[in-house]
Image 1 (cartoon, helix red, strand yellow):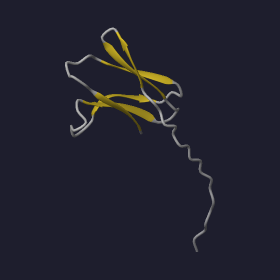
Image 2 (image 1 turned 180 degrees about the vertical axis):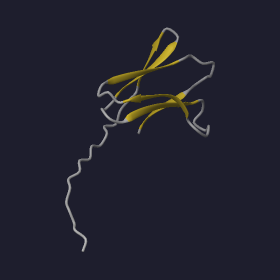
Image 3 (image 1 turned 45 degrees about the horizontal axis):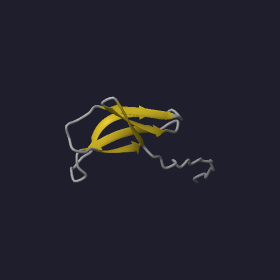
Image 4 (image 1 turned 60 degrees about the horizontal axis):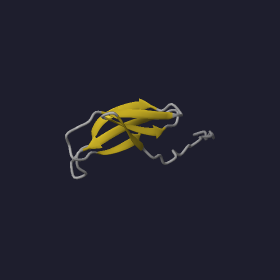
Length: 85
């Protein structure tokens, strides 16, 4: 006969984050707040109609602000996203 047991689980929903872009010299800095635990993947595309996103940097969440720097490009525009995993 199967035995049922009960355990408690805690679910924490991530707070929607914004990315703050700043320019320092000729570099673009993308700053965003993190939570402890998940990883944050910064990705970019040259055009939203391009297929896959290109990975720029992955950081472990620290519970504080993380800044990721991107080098200047000759592209007219670049789109960024931060994905939590």
